[in-house]
Image 1 (cartoon, helix red, strand yellow):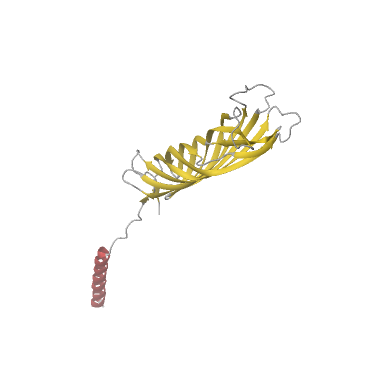
Image 2 (cartoon, one colour):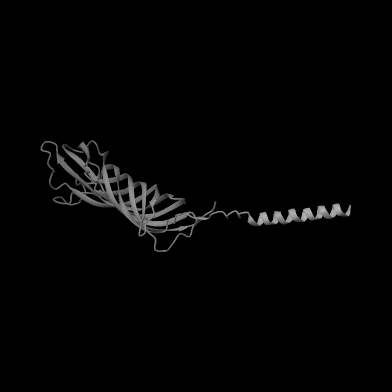
Length: 262
């Protein structure tokens, strides 16, 4: 009996030693990889292009006694090209920044109205050629994507003129150009397509709705802005701009500090 227990004990010791040796030779499972997410912090600038739609509300002020079409609205659409620059900083998954930009409405004609007030021999034309914006952005980052909302100050020079229906020529002395201030609000997204040695390449899309406050227009050449000037009018302008964006971003604050956990 003692020999049996001694044999069993010896066999158990051998198995135990073999098990420990095998366990020592087993590969250790690697710890989960912690990957650095893209850091949206930095300075950036780029170009954009797309389309825009303008709406102009014209109202005579003071009103013209006995006249028709005292107020009317007209639209005009065109292509647009622009520039944008900004700076932003990321905290966790949120990105806060400021951005400025300008959009030129390439090939833009005038919004045109036929027959107004007491003048049925002229077209009334309206347009804003350039829009300047400056405001804030708040974004939410997810991997290489960032979705954001934006808003702030907007301004642009709104022009009006009269054009003779008979000759097609501008009626001298009736052109106006007034800088009108207002605001914008919008939204968009960016996607980092290439992380470069000097700058990162980002593609995106952006939408802005611009409201320019109503302002007084009057003849600024031959007729002074006096009461009962029959061409004094108020113009209120709204612009909707949709663009695709190419952006280059530089990060002077070093490598990404945001960590994605898997």
